[in-house]
Length: 506
Image (cartoon, rainbow, N blue to C red):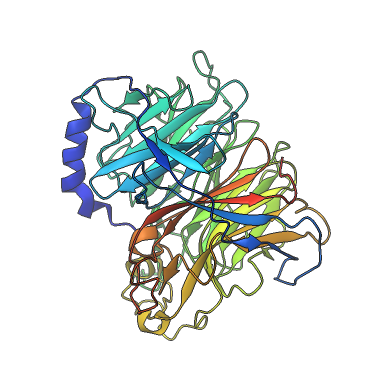
C-alpha cells in the first residue's frame, strides 16, 4: 500500500511550480525510437483452470522497448496507456529527473516520439508524479487524450484533442488531500446536461480514509466533488484481526481507500472496483457518484486491493481480481451486479502466483487481462501468518506475505490472457508472456499489492478500437538482475506489449 504522507514535502514543491502557470498550449516534442522484439512468442490456448486445448489462430505476443532519440531506454513506473481511433498509442512514463513524459507511436509500436505537454518556458507541464496516469476517451467523435499526475495536495491535468500535437494544461483538477493512487476515466452522462463535452470525466483517488471521486462535465476544466465516497476505509462490518475487540467482541476493520481503475458503462453507470477487507467488491453509482451501492462480486476471498472492472456494449459486467491462492479470477454479471457467475481461474497454464491484474472489454464476451505472473515461486502456503509480515501492503491488509529470502530465484513475467467467448459453456482463453521468460521483467517477490519498487502498483491493458490488444509494463530486471547474480529490482525500462492475430475483440 502506498503511504501518501511520506510524499508531501517534494510534491508540495511540484504543486507550487505547477500552480504558478495558467492554462497553456504546447507543441509536439522530440522523437524517440524502438523496435519490436517479439519476445513473448505464440500464445497457449486453454480453458478456465489452466487446462490446455488445441485451437487454431492463437495470437503471437510482441514486445516493444521504448527508447529516446539517442537510443537510451525510457524509464517507467505504474504505466498506463491508451489507443485513439487513429491507431496512435500513448504511454506515460516516470523519469528519474522528476518529470513525466508522454510517448506516442504512430506505427503500431515500432517507433516512439515524446509528445509531452510543455509550459511556455519549455519545461514539462507534468513535472513530478508518483502516480502518472493516461486515459484516452476514444468514443465516437471525441478522441481526447488525458494525462493526470497527483501531488498528494492536488492533481494537475493536461489534455489533447489533436493526437498529442498540442495540449491544454489545467493545474486545478483537484481532489482533496490526501490524494493517492488515482484513476481517471470517462463515459456517457447519467444525470448531467452536457454542453461543451459529450462525456463526464471522473477522477477517483485514495485518501486512506475513503475512496472518493470528483467529476468534470466540461471535458476536464472545472471539477466538482461527486458526493459520498465509493468506499469507506473504515468498515464496521468487517473483521480485522489487527484491531482490538469491541465490547461486543467484534473487530471492525480499517481496510483503506486503495482501489482499482474506474469505468463507466454504456448507460452512464459508474463502477469502482476494490479488494476490500479481504473480499472482491464493486461500488456502483447510477447518479454520477452522488450515491453509491457496494456489492461483493465473489466469496472466495481476495489477495490484493487491486481489481479491475469493465462493461461490454450491452452493459454486461466483467471483473478480475487475485484470489486467495494468488491466481487470476474472472467473474461476470448480466444484471448490473445483482448476480455474479462462478469465479473462473483464467491465469496462463503453469502460472502459480500472480499480481496487479488489469482488464479491458471489447465486444460481448470479449475480454483481455494483463497481470504479472510466475511459474517458479515457492507458492502457497506461506510460512508467516497475517500480522507477522514486514511488507507494508500485508500489514495493512492483514495478508500472509512471502519471505523475500525464499523468493531470491523467483522470476516474473508480464502475462496477457484474452478470450473472445467468455459466455460460452467452456470458453477458450489465449495466454502468453510479453517477454521471453529467460529474460524476466522481475526477480524476487511481487505482491501482494505493490510489485516491488520499480513496477509499483499497476500495469494496464487496452483493447484498441480496431480490436487489437495493447499492454503496458516495466522491465525491472536489467543489468545485474538480468545476469542472474541474485540482484532484484534493478532497472525500470518502459515496455509495451501487443497481441498480433487471434480473435478480434471488438
